[in-house]
Image (cartoon, rainbow, N blue to C red; front, side, top):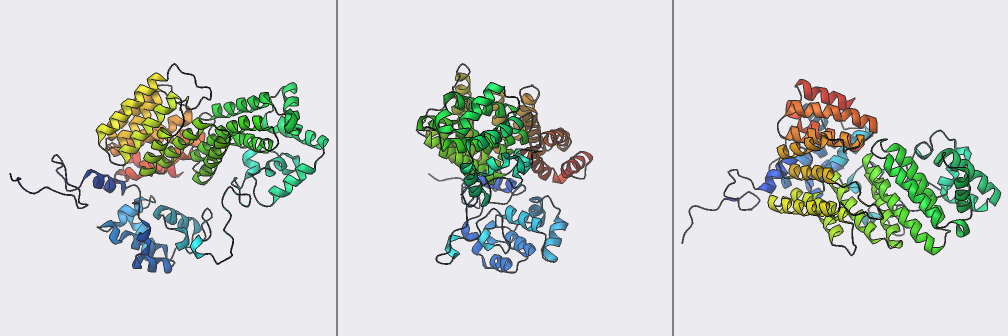
Length: 531
């Protein structure tokens, strides 16, 4: 039996479906669309190309960009117009960068190094968050660079006093308490710890009274404040289950502030709380320590989320690592699975499709019993990963149906640890919309986003973020005026809640709107985002 004609194949070798009238398979079509938003993922050997290495050796970022564009890995060379969009520039601006004098502005060098994903050991300038040297190039006997979160280089914001305790001078004692924890920066951490240990009981009590009453919890009743002072002053004796429960309630209050106040206020409070948990956990009895670290793991996971919201992935990863460590020591298995879910969601922030999928699957298959609502969220996240990796839509929708069934079953449950209580029908609808975006169905996504945004289910911060997602979907659907209108609504909320995550999404919207940027609506949105 013969065949009519020869099977058509994409240039990648994949056989084309019968209903595909184009010349590319689904994965290659998606990759081509993605090129208008971000650079492709490249293998390590990509950077060994002679032309690219010569460009790097020239210390001219423009030459590096050109070599990246013309690399044989891409098949067809990437145009200046496409690459310029990755940094929200025009083709003419990129042409000047490639053909003009070498860039000397550090922020621009950093921006392009980040966009192209240039390995740190190939750069001619120092990247602050990268290890200064790869292990392979260190001289024998030379110590490794301190890693973030280690005692030599802990991860805290450089503006620690302003971020944690605004308006309080360093001399008031509370900064000393914070600097004595493992979250402090530089050599002062160990010195301050020695100073703390050398304090007599009266001085400790006096300084804790001032710190707690003026900075952390000014609304505490005198009796509650006295109990907390006693517990922190002599944790080995006075730190009991009721103190742990107090810390749990304070963490719940921090979480309640998220979404309405923006990340700054809850971040300040939760870092204060984690500092006290870290110090107290060293002195309390073992049984109390496990309970305290369970609270600490939840707080560290929440801190990771807040740093994601202010677009600080480096510190977000540090706090997710700390949350995992504390959850393991506390034997808190559900929290370990929950953190894998959060890491998968962070991979989605970075549009790392494979890690979105594999981390969600790891959360699904681990040796823990997750609450039903968290299992629903994990299943939905797996659907998102399947959509991002180009799997068939029927598999994506099958997972979404599974998530809906789990979410329905979770309605009457009340998990003790309150993990994932925010995940409801509205959340599932919004996440389903994101799956449709990744599957190349932005019109369906826009309908779902609009449906939830018409309700009062969302906090101010989340409303701003999902307005930005709606704007992106409308832009992908070829509706620039409507996209710009929704984007402008999102801008005001992003500013009010200081959500860098929302601002980032608006940047993606602008990239998609580039073909219509001369029209009044898109132009107004660009001005609002830039300003």
